Length: 486
Image (cartoon, rainbow, N blue to C red; front, top):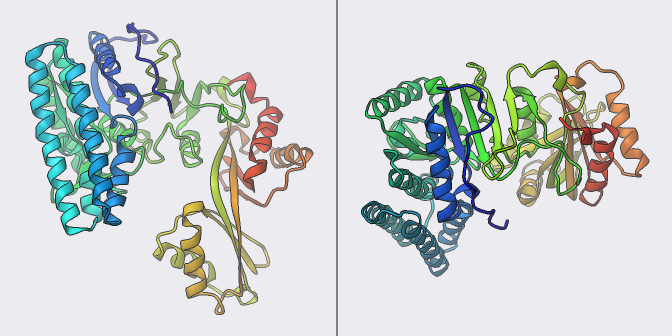
């Protein structure tokens, strides 16, 4: 993605109330350059005149990907490539450090802090290369440096314009998680106590915490991460802990869309969705939200807004417990997950045999394969499974090695398929939605390979070949008149 333009002079708009407690999470594209960092700092300063602002930050765009690549290079014992990429990360952050601060004294302090943190990063890398292995624990420690470095830049940029701010990692602010490295979950009761106490203590000192997203620490103090997009999760954990009025997710998109604008040119912004609809959208590929990010908000009914740092005139999408009746449509959006594979598992001995499905799924789970969607024929003689394309070989090998010739007679594979999901709470109890969906797709001559609908009736998902995906999405977007907007 090309770097978005720097934000222009910021004015507080679309805020009707004063003295709100707002958690603002900024994505990596919002802080991709020194001008962008300065403008985000000005935006926070402007908002903080009327509201209590707690900002949360992702790593600079592309840095987390680079850190993950470094862990892969270490696994492959490619020290040269790992060191080369590490040097690029160091250079990028040092250049921005020297460019984003005007006051020489503050700049010197920032450069000193960055050198200290980057020194620790290089020592960790050296140690991992020396041992020649990557453990889940060391991987999380290394990957967490993206946010650890980005918050230094923003905190010192705020100090530079007269806002007393301090950079704090998820561990520093008090986020305590389980020890499931790479996909950690917060221990919410402990976290709420720690986070609320820490933020209150800083408020008394009139100091703004600039919080690194994506990571926390287990009960032994080891760094843990929440998985890709986990900075959203950090923001909602913080919001729940301090009983915030709203969470704003700031990125380079206006909000949730009726479908992918790269597929359908007249895709429209969805103004309002419910928590459950947003969760479904996240699970079906909406990159704007981490699938678990809404969990901490639901119990306290804290609204979440998805907004564009570069287009603040647009109010974005609001996610609430109870959307207004005029936003209730049968179908809100058409979501797509591309680059998946279909595995058909067949065998007469599967019929009526208790535990067959459990055996298949536990075999895949042991191989580290995530099953995205399933469908079973009423005869019980076949089960269709959708997995990520990257997991296909692993999945097929596990099934063939462990089950072929026992409960399974045949494993068929179809590569390059797409999952298309229609999402909308307005579908619940409405007769004829499914027939409308498949009639629209059928008119375009598109073959539906597999179908699944949840008992909640909140979504209908089906599978087509990748080559027919765009035509299917366009057909459904037209059929349900989603171009009229959300």
